[in-house]
Amino acid sequence: LLEAFGNAATSMNHNSSRFGKFIDLHFNRHGGVCGATLSHYLLEKSRVVRQAETERNYHVFYYMVYGLSAEEQQMYDLRSMHAFDYLSANERPLDIDSCRNHWARLLAAEQELGLDQAARQDLLGLLAGILHLGNVRFANNSNEAAQIESPDQLDHTCALLMVESEALGKALTTFPVHIRGETIVKTNNSRQSADTRDSAAKALYGRNFALLVQRINHLLQGSGGGGGALSGLSIGILDIFGFENFEFNSLEQFCINLANEHLQSYFNRHIFQQELLEYEKEGIAARNIEYADNAALLQLFTARPAGLLAVLDEESRLQSSTDESLKTKLAAALESSPYFLARPVGFCIAHYAGRVVYDVTDMIAKNRDPLPELVSTTLARSRNRLVHALFGGHGDDIAAQQQQQQQ
Image 1 (tube, rainbow, N blue to C red):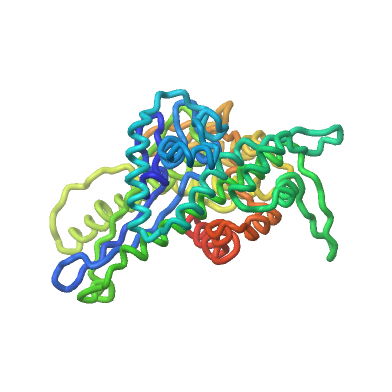
Image 2 (image 1 turned 30 degrees about the vertical axis):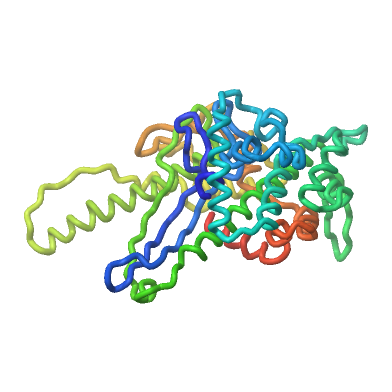
């Protein structure tokens, strides 16, 4: 389940995990495993709506498109991956038989997780709705206000997500502004509407992934025989992305590599610094071990008010900010650092593992990752029980948990 929903083909790996996870294995007093708890971090939601030229979306979409029966393909209008903007960027050959086999395994896993036929149909509606949502296109009228170019596609998307077409169309093309107790409805342009559409798709996928992890945790808790979880006997396993340096590096690689810098610092502290202090306390003669201390580099990322993260957050709060203004302010704030170099596309960081050039294109939009109020309230009224749960029911709890884990 986690592999289907959380892994994708990248330029370096055909089955790359695009999220981090921490597994806490609980043991009883006799040394037997009696349960586990899973936490997830940094799901690459932007992959749902956009992939690099040599990469793919999450596996589950391809499994679904080619694994469904002919009747189901017609019902959900899933004929080929090339029919969808969210999937058609990649022309690499796809093993269709493998997709069908994986789909069969996925259905068995969903059944083991406790999903009945109705729940699986709700999940199919959500996944198919995401793909069709990506095909909803916009154009500006003479007043630079967005209009929906593909109303039939919007209607089909809304049928799958079980929401009203008029309500979702309004949520994608307008936004409310609250001033002194009054609400004024303003119109998006076509670019803003496309961004709102993509935000909705990412929110649908991300919240469903968080709910999937919750369900897996419920299954993994076990009976607790022997009181393993309460006894405090546990082993924690961190499974997270390695250091990444692609042809195009954006906010995703920025966060992943920062996490690896923190891990490297943790390693330095526990394997070198603290161990050598123990030797010194006990009077054990040990030769001095030289290692690269990345504390100054971490400060480049985390310093306030002029670190990388602080400048990015400041620009993300300003409506007038652009990719160019972010690049300019980063260069002005950090040009004196030996670890920072300005580049035409953005900036270069001298990480412990090597230099990486980051492209600032869309970095502000990714950092904001907003979900407009109208979109959220429209999806909360969905007649699809899963969509309603994600945005109505306990959707706010899931969103808050995601934000906390991201921080």
